[in-house]
Length: 209
Image 1 (cartoon, helix red, strand yellow):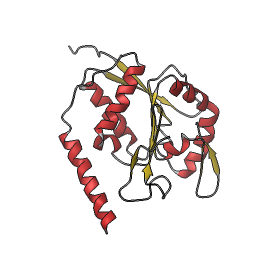
Image 2 (cartoon, rainbow, N blue to C red):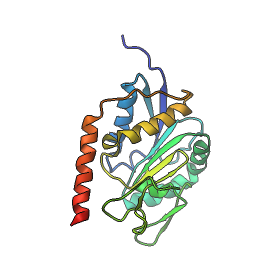
Image 3 (cartoon, rainbow, N blue to C red):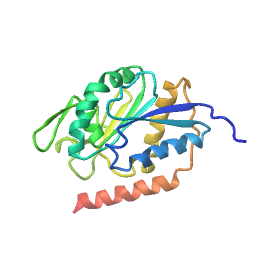
Image 4 (spheres, one colour):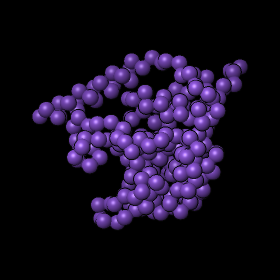
C-alpha cells in the first residue's frame, strides 16, 4: 500500500480543450511526475469557458496556446469570467505558466495579425534568444516574469527540456499550498539536460549561418 502524498498541489488548467496545441498535456505530466518522485501529488482541474476562477482554489495555473480563431473568443471569455480571479490569485502568491497564446492573453492585451485587439488578464524577460526575434525583435528578450507568473513563446517540450523551470513553478506552488520553504530533492536530469543542450547547439548553428 503506497503512502499518502505529503502535499497536494492544485493546478487549474485554463481552457484545456481550446488552448492545447503545444505539448501542454506533456508539460503538465512533467509537473505531476516530478512531484510524485518527491512524495507529493498534483490535482488537475479543468477551467473551461464560462467558469469563474476562485482565487483560493488553486496553487498553480496553466494556460497553453491555441489557434488565432480560438484565441479571440477565449480572450473575451477570459476577461469576462477569469481575469479578476486570476489577478487576485496571483496577488495572493499563486504561480502561473502561460505558453505562446497563453502568454499573449496574460498581458494587458494582444493585437492579432488581422489588427483585432484582444483583451488580456493583466516584467522582466524570462531569458534571451540566441537565434530568432524574441519578444519584439529588438532587445533579444524572450518571455516574461512578473511575481510568480511566467510567460514564454517556447513551444513543444518546454518543461521536459527545462526541469529547472518546472521545479521553480513547483516550489512556488508548494509554498502557496502551505509547505513552507519546500525542499525539492535533486533528481537525475541527465537526459533532460542533454536534450536541452542539443536544442541549444542547433540554435547556435542557425545563428552562425
